Length: 270
Picture 1 (tube, rainbow, N blue to C red):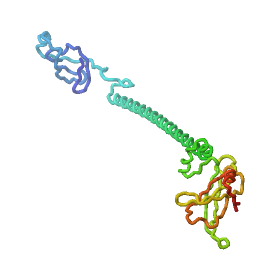
Picture 2: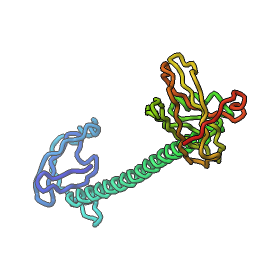
Picture 3: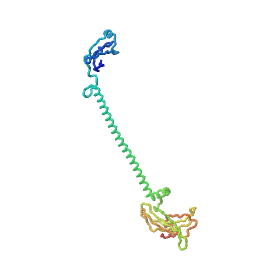
């Protein structure tokens, strides 16, 4: 049983049966203070009550020194104990902070790797789409030859697509007077949009009315018989007294054999 002096706080260890069933007054051997110690509930029994009919005074001789938790230096000073616990808490908190920092750094690295991976997927996808689009534009003559149904798709996005690999564009017209006769002057360009050299066929120009019917046609001979990839040439022509109901001028390529069959005479480009 452990007793503590109320004056000097010295602790003493005594036998469990020294107090008795009715309690006992004890005196501290360090400061001579006396106080009454009541019996513990589980120590009460009839025999002790009979043995201890009167209060007795007893001097407690030996204080107990090992009832407190010792610190690292073996001292029972409560301040030292609290400081040791605070140091342990600080070390524990520091370890937790270090582990959290390591986890945060690892998470950031994982996030960067994940973002880089997603970015690379998008970059590769966009590059593939760009290459596919470029190939579809450059090789559209071969694509239209193999898949004729793709020609309207190219035309819908403003690209000329035909099996000849040639494009007639930038058609310009203006009226003029030649020796008192009204003449329609026509200028245009021919371009090879394919990836290989192409033979340039004859150019047929046709006047059409509002219903799309051909009113008259004539043929213009280009200045070059072949065009390299991306090469462009100009052509010019003129037509005296065009039909009054003509609303549209349509250019197209026509083969020499077809010109011979229709007995059309090519006019030289100027």
